[in-house]
Amino acid sequence: MPAEPYLLESTLEPLATFRFALDLGKSRSWSGIFTECKLPDVEWDVQQLKEGGQNTYVHQLLGQRKPAQVTLKYGLTKRRELLDWYAEVMAEDFKSVAQTVTVSLLDSIGKPVLLWNLHNAYPVKVTWPEFKAGDNAVAILSLTLACSRVEFDQNP
Figure 1 (cartoon, helix red, strand yellow):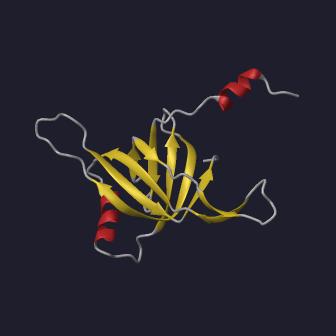
Figure 2 (cartoon, helix red, strand yellow; figure 1 turned 90 degrees about the horizontal axis):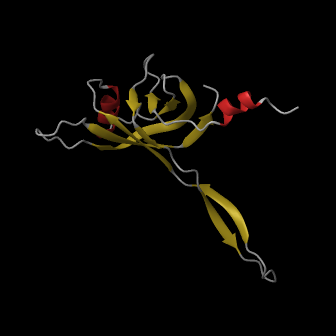
Figure 3 (cartoon, one colour; figure 1 turned 135 degrees about the vertical axis):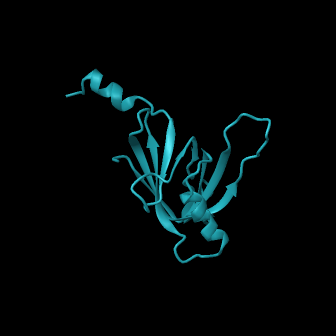
């Protein structure tokens, strides 16, 4: 029996990208709220193998997965958790740097809708905002994380 139309509307409606939250797992609250998030593309190397006598196609064999990086942008705040994490990398204190972090897509009321778990993630790049005394703008910081594996969870 098909679903009622009013039930389909809420499940087929595209999700708005209001904001993203990052949880480092060190505290009970989010480590940062982001306005932009570029999640990694999932892409695999493909090895092409030509077989003698088969001129109509080429075998395409799955190779290694390409590395993943996530870029997050947010307004600089007084909260230091993310900056301290980056400072550990800069100080070459690699013992506890790589960790599993969670990126959450939040809806308009701040409730997590989708989650991405980034395993063995660590910061590899920070782009600082440009500070100008005459501007009346929010200082936007860009943080890039490398990770070994991304798991998608649609049941937060």
